[in-house]
Length: 207
Image 1 (cartoon, rainbow, N blue to C red):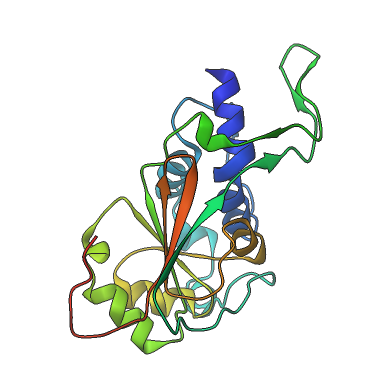
Image 2 (spheres, one colour):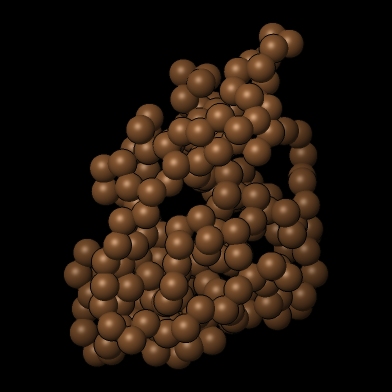
C-alpha cells in the first residue's frame, strides 16, 4: 500500500498539488502519505485553513496566478488524444527504513496502479466564452471536477463559476501535453484522455 501511494504522488497527483500549493506556502504540520488519493487529501486540508486570515483578501481577489503559468490558444476544433503518463523519478524515493525504494531514474506509469476518478477541466479565465461554456456545462454541477485556469484573476473567476479554481502551470500543461483550451482531462485505462472542445455557447455540454 505504501508503494502504491508513493507511485501516485510521484507520478501524477503531486504535479497538480505542488504547482498550486507552492505559492501559498506550508501551513501547520505535515503528515505521511495516506492511502487516500493525494488531490483529495490536499482539498480536504485546504478547506480546514482560514484563508481570509492567511492571505490579504484584496490580494487574493486580484491574484493573477504563479509566475510559471502559461497561455494556451483557444481550441479551433474538437479533438481527442491519449496521453501516456509514464513518469521517471527525479529523486531517490526512500523506503522509510534508511534505504531507497525507487532510485532516481526509475520509470513507471502510475495509472498501472491506480484509478483517478476525477475530471480536470482547463480553461482560459480571461476568455468570457470559455467561462460561460463551463458554467453552462454539466461539469459545473459536479463535485468530482477540478477546474484549472491558464489566465484570470483568482477571486473574479471563483465568483463567476462559484467554485475554487487552480492555476494550470507550465509543468501541468506539459505533463498532460495540453495544446489548447478548453480541455477536458480524464483517465481512460492506462492513459489520460485529453479532449479539446470548441466553446459553443447556449447549450449543455454532456459528460
